[in-house]
Length: 468
Image (cartoon, rainbow, N blue to C red; front, side, top):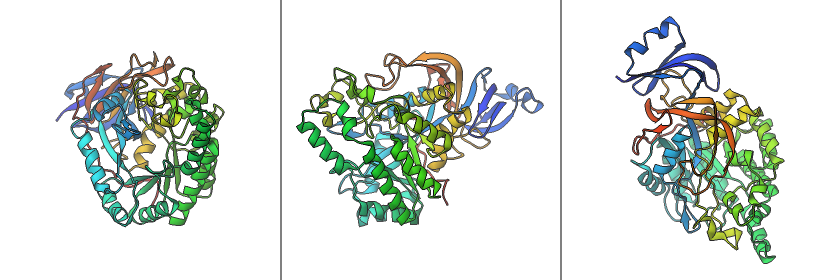
């Protein structure tokens, strides 16, 4: 039996803040006891490893429920592999990712899952799970949904955007939601009106509007709100829960808030880029704005206050990254002269926990809410709790020793993501990951990477714990 003791830190979960020692045995949390208490007194002598966490936070490893490692897009693919992306996640205090497998047009759901297993197996530094992007809703794939949910892939993503690639029409979305209502699956939606956006793209290019900033201007907030309203009503008709990904606009959030006020099982996520960046970044000169092209797009800064409020009021439950990095050189540059050809996606898997701690420092959220939106709620939302997302007896010992006092400056020079720029270049934040345990095994040890590809295990998931 391997035994680790973490001494003298402030243990923060979504529910509690307690000065406690943590006993880890064979990869799981065995017990917590008050620091200096008789109960904890004998732990250190019998331990293989003792970690001094005095003046530090002891927090659950982050759960990033929205990543795209090695995702094909627009003739290229995301620059982080499962190996580089999960290593960077660990550096940022995230110990579990849920990535998106993709059903190819004409292909089966299970074939898509098998493809993503082949990409990830033996490569990951931390634990991982999968969602399924359902891009071909038909009688066969609807039947497969049952098997998929039973196998531990209990969430499926549908798009109202990207005609010809991922778009599902309202009838297909309704059928998938009806199936989810019967099998316990959670339907996730990318909610933007894709056909209308395509018209606006065509018109903008015809007017000679080709710079990156027009990406944000054609993907209008009203078209996010319209699609959000529509998928909420479809889910209501189907009697199924709904999770809307990467909510970026106050109008879309208002639709979610209204539905939740009506008692509907509707949930929403936002991402750090919508909380900390804006259309001002998309308008940076010399094509620099291409670094910030993602969908849904960055919004004017006045939307940020509504998103923070949504996080405080629990109308938004989760902050994920939608990590989908493309290098500026050679990948983002594919869209020089035509913003519609810029690969959509941004890096962020390494930055999320630190940015949200900065939000604590800035007074936007509390420490417990930080842990809730970054660890516990995504674990509950996607059937991983309490194995993941908390520090409690029986939980996996995915634990981060976090220094809340050290300042750092975010930069491509120092990050570990496989991408040639940082979306937060030069941003000064307070707080930094010091040590990371994954299932009790050190991956980061006092700012040294000691993990390895293949340590991360695939984790089948249960169904959403907020419904039923």
